[in-house]
Image (cartoon, helix red, strand yellow):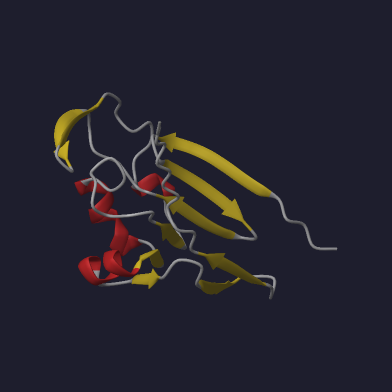
Length: 137
């Protein structure tokens, strides 16, 4: 009988360590120290230092990167970490900008990763859901 136990460890902000099937994933790596930064025309303030070092999380089989344009989802320290992961899975545009070990997925497309026990993990890209609330008379 196969088990599907998942372990989730919140690192900080959008950064989450996911352990499943013998693989380790990291979402949106942010490892910079506290600072004020401008991102997408807005000023943001990071208040916390990461509780663990990026190096202490290795090995990472894949980084699941929602997008690379904003420092609150991929800061300079997180960007420097990407080559240390086995693979980076993100958007097609991010893959073009980042290069290296980044695989870009279109919305609703998938990629597969082999699990140590012979099964296959399928990762599917979901588009960002944007809603606009509008009032009309």
